[in-house]
Every structure is written in C-alpha cells, then in structure tokens.
Length: 108
Image (cartoon, rainbow, N blue to C red; front, side, top):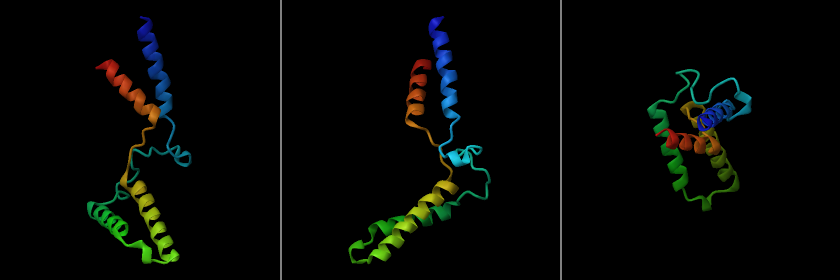
C-alpha cells in the first residue's frame, strides 16, 4: 500500500514538471502541437532547407571573407530557427526522460 501511495505521489508531482514550457515567452502555447496547419513546412521546403544546409557545410570556407562567413552563419541560424518554429517538435527535458523511462520499467 505504501508503494502505491508513493508511486501515485511521484506521478502527481511529475505531472507538474511537464506543465512547464520550453520557452517561457510562449507559456500559453504548447510547442509540441503546432497551432496552425498552414504554418507547417511542406516536404519540399524541408528538403530544400536540408540541401542548403548540406551545401553550406560542404563549402570551402577558408577562401571566404569574414562578412561572407558571418552571412552564412546568420543564414544557418535563421534556417534552424525557422525549422524549429514551422517543423513542430517535442521537447522532453532530461529529468522528464528519466522519469518516463523509470515509469515504463515499473509499469511493464
């Protein structure tokens, strides 16, 4: 009986940990569920972005000036930000992941 109460208490406490958002600015929005369907990237746009990233990584950057390198870095940062915003992702922290694994082990 004590084990069941302890397990129930841990589950209730852990649910409060998942209520926190990954970005405090968007605490009212759930980052795991995209708000609008038109905001998601199409497969073609995602493939173009991936090709561009691979193209930038394969470039010989030793011959580029510092301004060109900076422009490439900002382009990469913008693409990464855009992929996160439009691609949809699920953020699970380290403690949440450990708790999830422990619960799966206990329940299965």
